[in-house]
Length: 320
Image 1 (cartoon, rainbow, N blue to C red):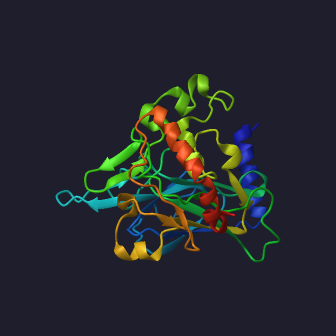
Image 2: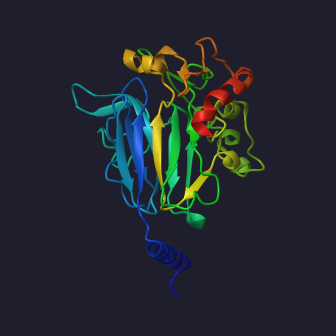
Image 3: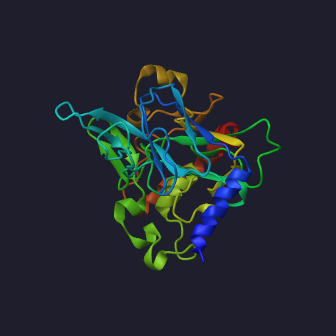
């Protein structure tokens, strides 16, 4: 008798054929005031995408077709350049270690904001999320677009999700990644920074009941309530749309105002305010809002909660 895993794979493949499965299109848009180099990684056993990395100048978009049943992740690399002597390509954040603009099967070095997808998953749904479990390097939002020929979005939560806030300047000092030239450029997760089982949800903490939010994960969650902030943050952070009828726009820096784009400055370094599409200021994280220890990380959470109402109003037109 054929192994059960083989039968399940065959059943899934036949189901895709019977539904006339179509690919989904990812439209990747750079709203940042600087160049971003998207990286793309297919999960093991998933068909490859036509590209694994490219440069995206400010204001540019590029469409990438994903085959039905594809799963994987994409992210933005920042502050990238080729070494003048060796020609090796590398990035200050999100580097995939390939030495090239194409990631060629390499994943993102932490910390990095991740967009994760499983197309044609359980129940005929696409599953997607934005994850800060591996840390944060730039704002990112996923917006689904359901085909006009579809009867609806299907069951589940078919809605925009992500993290539209700029967090690098406010990152707790013991999580913050700085460069001499650009200042704060990324924010590590507590698991990445400390490696403790309680932060990484492993060992004795390897279950939803045992692994609970920490002051550090709450820093991310307060600013970005729809994004994953730790490993078992599923209830508020996994979104679904009808498979085969939905395309997705992934936007880096969805709220950067035009005036910031035109300056050519890097808002990660400048600590600039971010704005929603209606021009309303979303959140301003000043350079002095930087807790320096686990004890003061809670204070950062309180600061973010204090502006949560303003954040929610500004995000309402973007994520609701």
